[in-house]
Length: 387
Image (tube, rainbow, N blue to C red):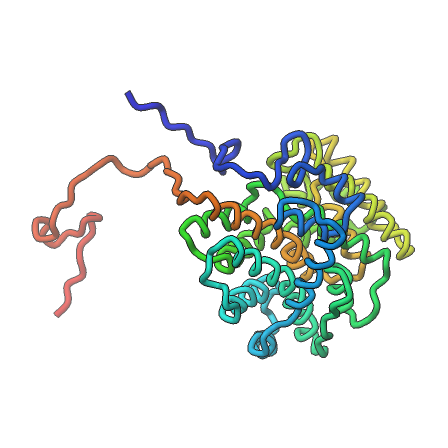
């Protein structure tokens, strides 16, 4: 006797694989280290090394890793030419998705799926993604691109390339913390997408392109772009409570709240909220922090929903003078480390990911040849007569 089929919409609660990279059980941790501990005591560069190489680096290992990543901070000329040719309406995420696909053509290891080759490709992509984001942004604004610097960290180099000036240390640290918090999150939609693609024995670049496509959606990475738009609609602390209550009455989705896994609150949101407020204080404008506090209170009281990481991230990036179209690409320049770790892990013990589906169509039926139906179609309509 066959066992009954179990259907879980959205695969909620379904164990779809094993991983040693991260877990959300008892709070998010990367390879055994709590994300709070990492955010407090480490740089993103250290965390990226941890995700790709399984352990936190020694000072020497970190220096060698940063040197390898810095050496990879260059883009092929044809990619710059493409950025200049793209229509103005091309979104940053679409440009980045295409950029990673093009980078595959210029990487001699692309077709090599060995562990060492995938590590090399992952480190190069870690270096190249921020360049692609910054260069496309400046080109879309009619500005000259700013050459990367090898002496700066991941976060500092990105801000330098974006603005063309020495980055503020406080801004670098705040961005660095956000990158740590965004770097990895178990079997989320984009990481699972990457694993599905590479499980067919496709390559790392193809997996990352697919992951970017998954992250682009507003129910995944795109949520952080909608946070500031939502706050601006609320109009400020004076009208925030009235606006959010009316929005809830209309059954509008309040982006930046709730999470499939975290029912009692997202620890990452609590950590980054501190940095968002510090950035707002440094900018001399607490208007959006005060608006956010009011909306948080109402949404929790009315819907029982806590903020997720996207809620403070959108506000932080706004205070760092980063434009909204950059928010999700910044997510990518962090999460590419986690995605790459998942691809490497999947290929290390690979099994093709091929789930089943519950069929809801018609019962089994037989086909009647058209010759037996006369002039009527199988749908019961007359066929047109020509001639």
